[in-house]
Structures are given as C-alpha cells and as structure tokens.
Image (cartoon, rainbow, N blue to C red; front, side, top):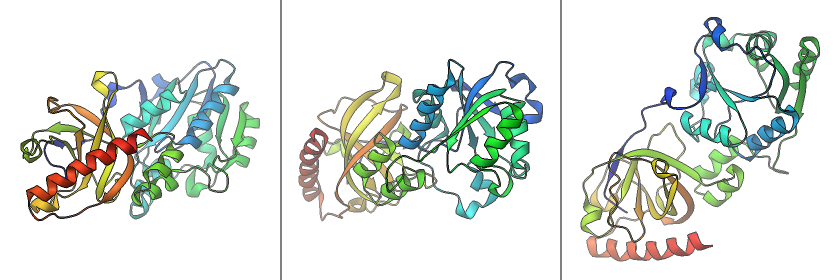
Length: 330
C-alpha cells in the first residue's frame, strides 16, 4: 500500500469555470434561447465514451457549419426518478463538459433535471428544449435514445416530431460490435478492475480526481511520497489493489507523470479511509498540496495485501514500481 498525501474530496461542479449554459429553470431561461439554428445532440454522456464521441463526430459532420450543441442533464435522471437504481458516475460534471467540448461540441448546455421535467411528455421536451430554446435544425442521437415521461419518446417519435417542427433527425447505430460501447459497460469493467478493457470503451484511461492535501506523510518517510484521493463512493473506482497509471496536472498544461497507484484503505497501517494513492516515479520533489489532479488508471498489477512490517512493504513497493514501468511501456 502506498502512503502519503491525502486530497480533499471533490465537492461538486464549479459551474462558472466552464463555457456551459446552465438551465436551472427553462421557463426562466429566455435569455438562453438561440435565435439562429443549431445542430443538437442529447444524452447523459457519462464518461463520454467512444459511442458518445461517435455521436458528436456525426453531429458535427452533418451540421454543415451550424454550431454543435450537446445537451446533458444534472443530476443523472435516475437520481430523481429512481435513486436506488442511479448508477455511480464515471466523470465529474466538469470533466464531462471538457470531454464533450474535446469531442466536438461548440457548446454544452446542462438541463437541471427535476421531477417536473421527468413528467414532461416527449412532445413537451421537443417543443421546450429542441424547438423553443435551441431552434434545432438537426438532432443526432444514438438509436437507443429515450426521452420524456416514462421514456415514452424514441427516435421514431423524434423523426415524426422533427418533420412537423422542421428539423432533421439522425439516429446512429451503437458502436462496439457485439458488445456496444456504453456507460454501463465501462462502469462494469472498471468495477471489475479491467482497466485496459475499460479504456477501450472510453477511448482513454479511467480517471479519479481530487485536490491534494497534506496527510500522514508515511510514504515520504519511506521514500515514496504519494498524492492521495479519498474515494467518493458516488463515483466508479476499481477494486482495492495496485495499479499502473499517470498523474495528470490540469493546472500545468495537462502534464502527465508516470505513477504507481494504490487503491484501498492502507491495511498495513490499519487504515480505515479508502483512498487512491499515487507515487510519481522517481520524484520526491513534487509539491502537490492544494493542487487539483486527475489519476489515470491504466492497468491492475496485483491485489491488496497487509504486510507484516515496514521492510516487507518497502520491498514490495520497489517491485510495484518496476512492474509499473513495464505496464506503462507496453
């Protein structure tokens, strides 16, 4: 188990820091209404996986120069409709916005999902969002897209509504072959510790993020200072064990540093709090306190073990560092 620095948990979206239009109340959002036509795609987009990326690319390809707008929801609709069935999240809202922008969205608009919105009929959603607010000329969605009360709207309904309202509809088949890309598949693979398989779905390594704060500093005393992210159980985190990956520093141009990463509660020292702890290879000079970082988890190296004494732990940590170098070079 790696030890050391512990970050503060992410407390929630920092709405003002991204180029996002937030609709907390559509009835009061007249200033957000577009007067010019747009190309729109709608979805939860958790993880912004390769299927989502395909939808964004298709929307842009069909847009004909129109601005591409991605519409998403906060919180996840199931948090309102059926909280006991709401999935753990793959990304923070901030990161989802970044990834949607990188995938081709000119704008990201977040609908504040509520019980009132959940009761809208499919036609109400079309009228109030796609027509009145966005002046949609094109709507592109995955062919499994469902919307409106009781998920009553689908691509067939959307095409008919578009024909009446004057916008075109493109329903895309799901990517991924016999096992289509989906947020559910990505969550399952991460939860099973299958990080390389999850990356094939996401199009990048799965990430955990946090703000580094000073911890017990045992790792520093052992020669392996770490940056630790407390596990937020509302997000998907792989099983306890040791992983190879990268520490990414968004505040420094996205600098990526190779790291040996431990996920768990520090059993050698009878720890209680579950953490994601990252030792940046060959670096004892980093001052990451107070810095927001992302931890990319590339490959699982081994399970978690409670060691009898510090010497055995340090010996294993050297082996884990060597294994990390191999994993990251492959």
